[in-house]
Image (cartoon, rainbow, N blue to C red; front, side, top):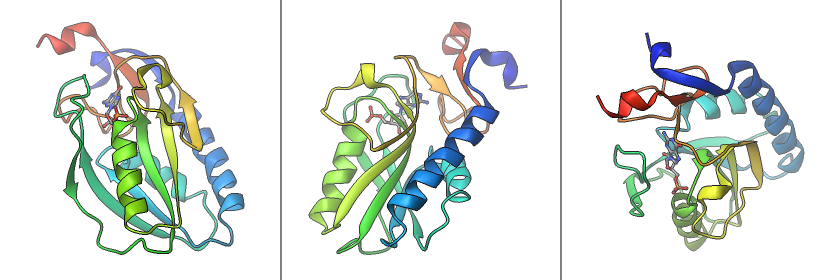
Length: 180
Ligand code: 5GP
């Protein structure tokens, strides 16, 4: 059903599994004595975070935060809105933000600064995808799954007008989908 709207696949399900394993092992090593809070940014983080945490073998907490930046289209608006705040304090804690994709870097910078302001000891970022060519703020995530070109992608949590998040891979939509 959804596959007919996809022009090509950029990151396969198998590649995402391998990426999650590799990043999970790195995070396990780096955070083994830190009891971090892993904070996923809704809604795009859900499939990636679920896959990633299976491979993180340390004491850690999982939290979610709602952040909106694109408002349904394919271009970043520059406005970042917190739609669901954290239920816990990050004061004195090591925080790892789990994100689906970093594009302009605005969303992650806003969240990072907020968590630091609230007293987090360290704030690092793990992202499934990185689009460095889209960057408008100086930022490099510590853990990157796959670096992709400046293209609008969907699947594995990433949406176009709230659809396609349930695809098991990352793909590029056919141009006609945007003209529907
Ligand atoms: P940034 O603030 O770095 O520009 O954007 C981060 C957010 O924008 C991501 O969490 C995601 O929601 C959205 N975004 C950025 N690039 C893409 C993309 O290629 N596809 C989709 N579906 N969303 C994107």
